[in-house]
Length: 306
Ligand code: NAP
Image (cartoon, rainbow, N blue to C red; front, side):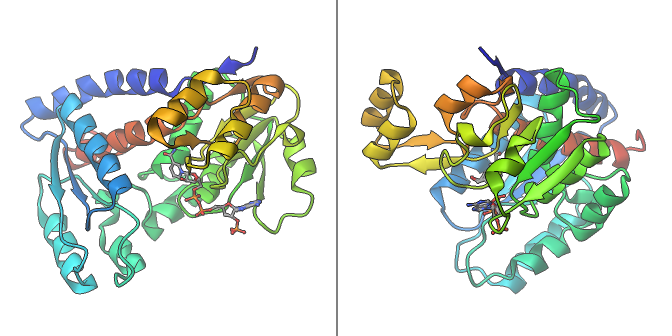
């Protein structure tokens, strides 16, 4: 049986390491503070934001949710970001994506000061990532590195293949793996013979957004497989195909009407991989843990501790 890289365990480990750092900042009179801007009422985004606020609460990080209506203009949202930028008790500003169509998302993300950009999306922080300089790192990719390192998976000298080249997952994940001295290949929808490229990977990262696309033919025997995908499957026949043989999963589908599925086939990965991240409970919990890490580090920089 392959090893399961347990995201909930690693998240708890990281949170328990953050607690004394938060306490030290609070003792200095400057607890870390995170502002989350949630435009409108997208149900998925509301759940993410609730979980982020709860994580702050658990750690003793000050948090604030700003919830403008989805009719807000780019100028009005820029004014909210500008106000948060000047407030000294706010170390991190997170604008929950996606934003409504009328909003110029790039302008909003550019308006967050790099020091408060706890998502690591600002071009200055992307540049710092490429240059290997200290700065907030994109949370999901940073979480992947934590899962590998804390799971005892060697990275240096290993062949890593990242499927997906988005600015928020694929590209930064590839860059972080490169900094850890992996030999990295980035794949995307135009990659020729994707299966063969993936089969070369000692570490295979799937960040695609397609339910169970990475089947056994993509996985080298014994590889470490990191599944970033979170896809909702609401077709019962598709769920039955993906979770073939799992009565419990199908019972859960029948109860809820849908299931969350990664980008990796959950049956094949158990047969082929040496270690893998489950969905849910793999990469997902790390994203919030790394957001907390970035917020605490921003507060430490403000307090002159870093
Ligand atoms: P994205 O912006 O849609 O990027 C998807 C990438 O996959 C693109 O680079 C695309 O290639 C590539 N791709 C699509 N179809 C492909 C195919 N058939 N073969 C090869 N490559 C293909 O998605 P994202 O934001 O990176 O997110 C990826 C997944 O991770 C989603 O399921 C998302 O929900 C999940 N996610 C999870 C977390 C978490 O905390 N667990 C965080 C962020 C995202 P092109 O560039 O050529 O179009």
